[in-house]
Image (cartoon, rainbow, N blue to C red; front, side):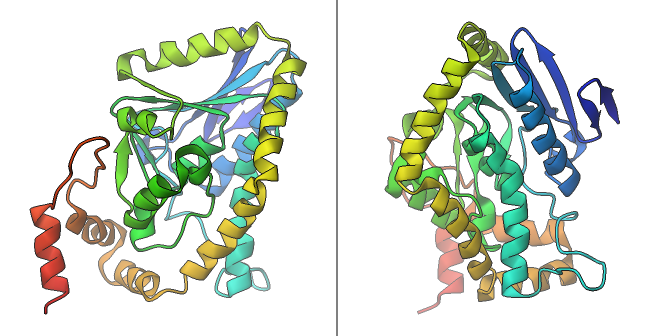
Length: 304
């Protein structure tokens, strides 16, 4: 447990220095997959930073090899206590999804700006976290995507269209393919991409500049931009995204996925889900052609 004047944290690290708060996801052995405790601690730390007059901005980053690999599929779910929501009913499912969304939504609702420092894997729920930040700076070789959309549901948070437009949002969401940081910059999914060795310096340099600005002015300029997106329906869409994810959970593919996890285990199920897609990495500005592995699998799955 990380103990500081700001709180006792088990799943994150929190520090304040030179006008910025750094929140580090601290589950490197799990590639910073988010469990219920991490989400609760994250929300607490964000409001702490927002309340602290010495903080001008917040940096979100991950320890170890990844920014965040998504939600911890072994830890999230319904209650085990009798008489409480289990997630089995449609409304239970929506309620549990919205509970997670509320933690992450703090990044949108807090007054001070946030920067996502993305390296390694930024997958599934990790993209929910990154895109809720005001600014995203990625390593060139970061891997960003939502592979869970291939078999596990729809995106429970969905700000993609506001970053990269409808066509790229569809291209990435409907296939579950990933995009590297360098290409993510080209389509506007991230603000900037830099070599991995320069990522921390780039983020800290931006935080240096933000620390020179009165925090009230930062708030005014962040919030008017967010309000403009709200007028375009951004926050209504987030609520609908949760309900849409619950709807997608009723698909045959998701039922098959759940059955496979019980029969073969999570690791083998994920391998079977992703193997037909090959590398699964989108290329921007160059032909992708037909992947022989995908073509062969498609022919096998859909015989004439």
